[in-house]
Image 1 (cartoon, rainbow, N blue to C red):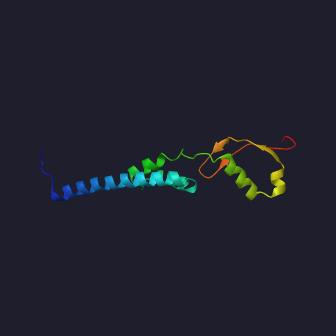
Image 2: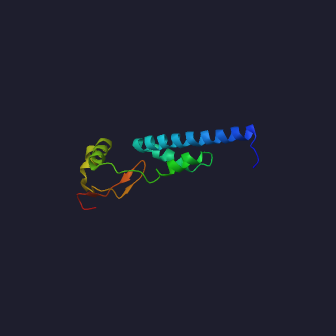
Image 3: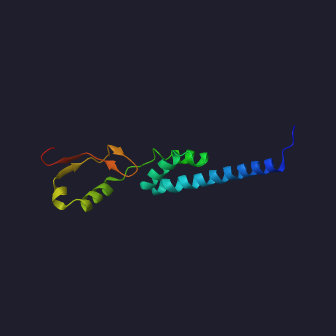
Length: 117
């Protein structure tokens, strides 16, 4: 077998080092972004689709594409009452507890007005 040159050995060692560093960074990023949620999940999705990102990072961040968790209905009601005026909010007779859809920066609920609409 041919002996590798010192330059080839250094390149192989650097590749191994960067592979380990990227894998470690990917794990840390994935964990932190999952806990932060929201716009950070959008960031993870964006980075995971870029060819410039090292494969360990893009692969870990790709696992977050379907990670959004629904907010509890109490948080939804709080958001609605603080962002809508009282008159508009009082038009609602009920709100579905379970969301129809959940995304990284939003979720959708059914709401009914007093007239049944």
